[in-house]
Length: 450
Image (cartoon, rainbow, N blue to C red; front, side):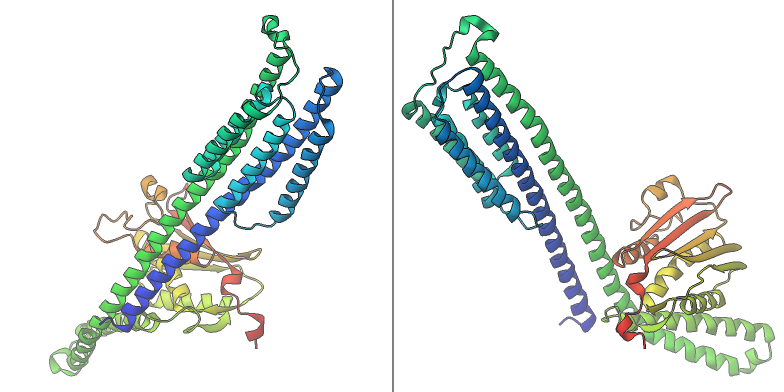
């Protein structure tokens, strides 16, 4: 049977998968909504184009058209588009069937207008191709074939039932033929609308694909973190007994005459006990946070108090020669601090200490509604390849297997809190790591301020 920590980790993996699925659904819905907005805009252009075409054909060229019937179709199309605009003005999910219905309405209105203006002898019959191409871009394959079948049936029906348009074909006149001019205008409209609208629709698709790729990468990294937490929790359980045994042995050594008479050995034993106590604290912290969500082991404090205590504890437990802490926060803020936040900042400091054991500095300030921490060291800096893959697991300049997880955890914890971590090299040597967190993610809620 799985232990409590294993069950929790499995639950967190499942929760992360469900959250990822929800975000995928939201991204898909957003793309569908944008595509529906494109169709609404295209329909308004179609209404304007039909009004202009009918007016020019009837008034300029004197072609007899059933104007009341054609204007009735236009009024219905305008009413449908107004209803669509009101329906989709909010960011609601749009299904394939709803996009299919919108295209079928467009096909129906085009068919009615062509039926009353010459059927297949009308050069604008080629506008059916626009509907087919839009269906290829917007709809699922089964729905696309449905549009192909419907448009084919409409063209066949127009050829059988509609009256020919009383316009002389006079192809011998070339470009001066009214029919050829209509075909040319239809071609230009088809080409322009396809380039403009399908280009925008494809941009929506590419943006959605990019967001989905980022989401999959993030989900994989978060699942990796959960599994690492499971392994760390199991290791912490296993380390408890040998650490306790070492503590007892070191205590016995201090009382043995061979060691008590040697100040140097006593000093070394004291240092060993200090480091052993630090290991036990780390293990206890892992066991404390295992199975607990953010907030259950948190405490209310202020940002200045939290940072001061963190810096004092870190400085006392690390062999740093010179450490500067510049606190530029003038207005203190009530916050909720927990071990996750503390470990994230300590990881950044530990990485800087490994690169620059002689000197490092941390600056803290509040910029707007963001907390900014800047850690500076005087080490060799980051390799360009490391900067390009900053925050990815197992990206380390130390050349040792299994390293490079510290900054990976820092980046992901910051991202889960709504913040970010960036790194850069200094012109004078060394590196900067900037940690940015929204105060809203760590601020104490007003109802608990007392």
